[in-house]
Length: 187
Image (tube, rainbow, N blue to C red; front, side, top):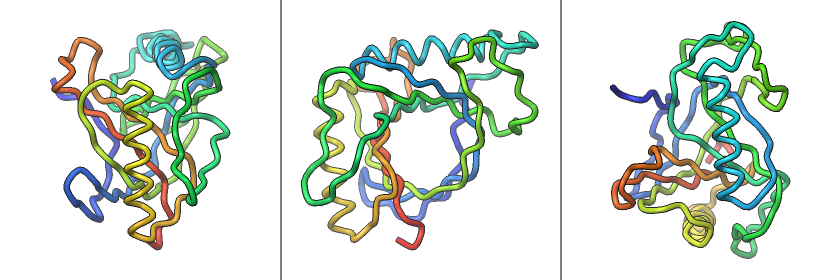
């Protein structure tokens, strides 16, 4: 069984670096507080509860990949590397809903922490990496992504997100992760 991923058009591919144009989508998201690992686990649990029937109609919704998380309120400084700092903070954890759903088609979440919303089409600079997505690894890959973005003259328009594609039982060497940065469409 294949897991649905958000639709995109590939604008550029250079090794593990890509520029992707994503279609508009609908997401379920929560804001959670904690370090990267705790926020990921808490956010995943809340969102999984929604798609596994924790909603007004008890409807099950197919799982999609990736699960993304973004530090809330992070500013991007292009003059110095941006790093993910260990500690606590607010994180936005998000599941993209299957493409067949419009916002109006989705059942109301039982948990008020879960928010449904439409996300407009956007262009992202993406860097793929394997292994675990520990804070130090994400910080290093974020630094690499920002260096590539700067070297290519791309203009960031939002914070870096961490995208994880695999269930927790996937061996570390088979895991697919990405750091994703929204960039201006004229790039």
